[in-house]
Image (cartoon, rainbow, N blue to C red; front, side, top):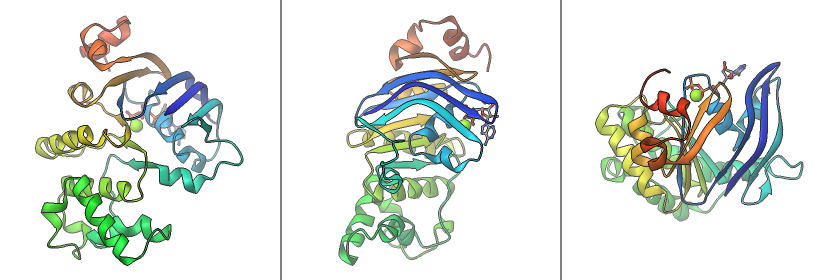
Length: 248
Ligand SMILES: Nc1ncnc2c1ncn2[C@@H]1O[C@H](COP(=O)(O)OP(=O)(O)OP(=O)(O)O)[C@@H](O)[C@H]1O
Ligand SMILES: [Mg+2]
């Protein structure tokens, strides 16, 4: 589904990603772990071309989704952004109603008529395990929701435009344990339909939700392995040290 080959990425002269080759299969959850500043977010942002928005960056190597080079001149970036949804560390709902937050992407992309939008908003809120909590107050401001609910709303907003890939950059790090476990259950259920990459500092979370884990350090992919294998008997000593909390 997603494949990178020999990615080197630079912020100006700073070499942030070093020769990263990685392949992520459809309908799996991949976790990126590693110390702060090792390049996890930078790598994640390659897949929806969000790094394009940062001045002075460049990269070499290949980055393909479903067999297509997403950086090819002829690849439509707006189509990519529909295909690849993103959820950030801090919930960032728009200053709009709950309904309009989820409908937003459908409206700006002129996807469907009114009844389609109503149905899609409901389906997305259900998929994000939020519907029962908000179905009677769809017209209320999104800011009236709790942090955990806002994060599920942002997930619903990402799902509304029917992406096939979901990128999540520390989606639960600002949440309490109950909201966190809701998000984790949600991630687990979403993989039936989506290919998911999640960045997390929480090893237990990586262990619980992911099929594969990539461990990054100083811009390098130190180890990429089945999550079970990674946490039981990693191949590299650096991985072992990190997951047992000896540094980072
Ligand atoms: N916009 C930017 N301009 C310059 N350097 C940047 C920029 N964004 C990130 N970097 C640098 O690139 C490196 C990788 O950053 P990145 O945000 O990808 O790390 P990360 O693994 O996501 O860290 P964290 O766990 O703290 O979120 C860091 O050294 C960082 O300082
Ligand atoms: Mg980051």
